[in-house]
Image (cartoon, rainbow, N blue to C red; front, side, top):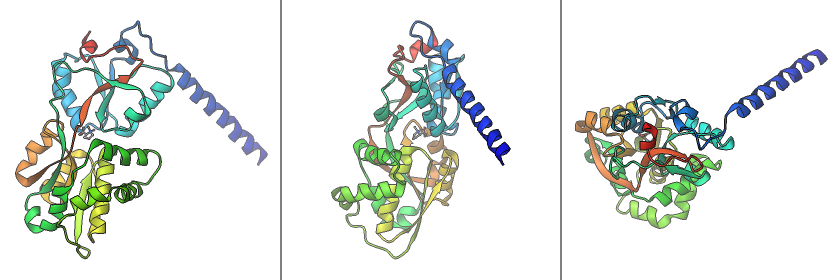
Length: 297
Ligand code: PBE
């Protein structure tokens, strides 16, 4: 028994040393050296199926001649973990950022300027339903159509979740505090008795927030809501095929254009539910570069 304890203690010590070694190995940012050299020409990205990664690969990296850069895929969770790590070590990092996102509240970050407008003009988050849904389920469609909020609203829910609330709980809290808005969305919508509805979403914090708020409202109206967590491609295919009734997380017209164009004949766009999004490469404010152009050098 004692022997095992000693072995465990020894292993723990080795692990601690390895972890400590790793973090101190992360070199801190040198403002006088090129950022590419310090990041191994790496942009810390997210899910390969996301619109942002597609826009980066197909447009931004081409427009700015960034072919020597590696776009590293991962997920929102791996990207935010790498960002946190870098900032703790004051190390250089370039991430795929977007707004609304809690990272801009938690850290001092800046978007790199995009003088070529490669990330596209302003866009919005749209509500999309399966074609035919508005005729089959006009009541639910009315609520979905009337759902419209602001970056301040969504950020409140996102931050609450980030601070440890369960998404459903954060949604209910927001709903309780914003009865006026909710009553606008539910105007003319009547209660039902257990009718089923399926909402699809991707595990991005903005989509988790919005989808949970809409799901909670539908639940209060008597719907039996099924939430399906998927990757972006399968989510769009699902709403096109009808296995998913609706999504409230379609970034258009640029970000998820590839999916929208592929499936648009099987979809109905109910229009924006939020305006004022942004997408781009972002860096901690201590990183000296200011423009995507600076990456080409
Ligand atoms: N995002 C967040 C998504 C949309 C929401 C910017 C990572 C994307 O498709 O890229």
